[in-house]
Length: 207
Image (tube, rainbow, N blue to C red):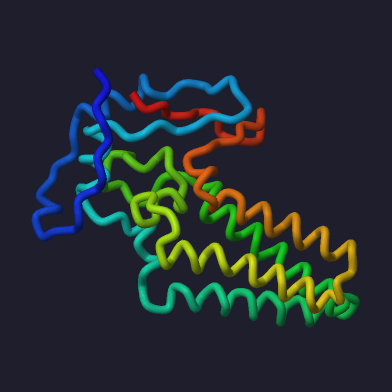
């Protein structure tokens, strides 16, 4: 019988007292199957998976709330622009466009492509979720998610302006912006686009 998912409880001193559940480890193998559809959706977590997620705070996603975590995005954009300005044959329009495209590629890989966590403390309970889905336990339009959504949009507008609204640069900047903005919208939550040989098609379907 399916176990209903429930909201993650708030962090408390007793949270670390939870222990990993063996049922999650045993259940993890047969819940993975190869998706045959182009677009699939990751199902909700089981009761056991939620328990494993709540063993400790998820440092893989919670760092975005730390002091200075927001500023690092601005610093990275400024450094990228400075580096591209050093390339002799790059015009100002091209350097802004390359800054936008580079930031978008890095942001997409970090927040939407890589799944799971680098820490082995929850028995792989986050293995099927990317970082964006892990932030704030999947809640939408939280302050940090609004900021992360606003950065690529603002960068697109700046790049378009300093590209003098050239049609070619506009299209490139717009496509780059959409690539990283669309996965952040609520309708894209837990959706997977499965491209043969390019994306991981092992999709965990909630039981």
